[in-house]
Each structure stands twice: as C-alpha cells, then as structure tokens.
Length: 152
Image (cartoon, rainbow, N blue to C red; front, side, top):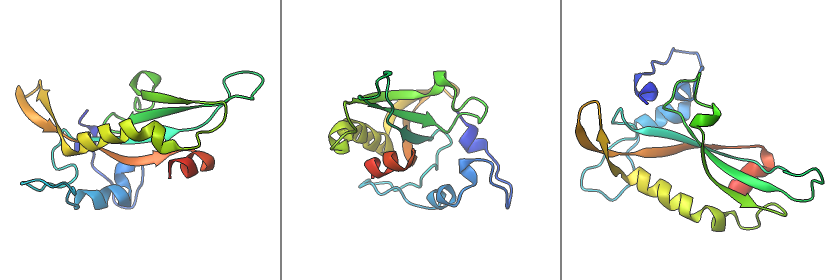
C-alpha cells in the first residue's frame, strides 16, 4: 500500500499515473477542506490514490438490456497487481434497461463517501501501531467516450 509514496519518477519517462502532470500538481496543492490545519494532497505516505471506472455492457445475449458497473482502483498497489480482479473494488452497479438518465442519483452515496475519505477517517497503522487520519483521493475517472460523458 506504499507504492505511491515510494515511487520514484524518472525524468522525461511516463510509466505510471504518478509520472503525470496532474499528480505532480496535486503534490503541491492544498486540500480544499475547512480545517484548522491545512495539508497537501499525499502529504502522508499512507494516503491512498483512487481511480474510478464505469462502462455499460449487455449481460444477456439479446443485448436489449444494459448495466453499468462502478469500479474503484487502488493506485497504491504495484502495477503488477493493481488491476487484478481481487484488488478491484466494485462499489455498485447501475441497472438497465438503458443507460442511466441521471448519473448523480446513482452515485450520490459514493460521492459522499469519497468526500469523507478526502476529509479523513481514523484508521490504525499496524506497522507503527498508531491511530492516524487516513485520506483517500479520487484522482482519475475513466471509461469510453459514452461513459465519461455520463460521468461528467
């Protein structure tokens, strides 16, 4: 879970999301939360980077019905295992028969959870045996063009 904190980028080479300009900009940006102690994105090595993906597909042969799974990816895991099925977090499925008309109504609870994770939740670090404020940030949302249009 410390892949992101221990990752060392190579100048001029993009091998991972942590090499990108978006992530590098986040490192120097204050988290916009009304808090007594301001902090930067990923200032704690235990902070978690998340990505969200969705895409509609037809689960049956007749293809007249669709569903839209919503999946979170944990970018703190090494590249070799990051997208393996057992590490993907399936947070919900939007049922058909057609694509969702109002995406916000399906994702409202997820957005509330992600906001709470950005603010921070108390967690226990078993390595150092201390309680700490865990922060997780959604840094990427992706899918094909219809899925991204729906998310936006």
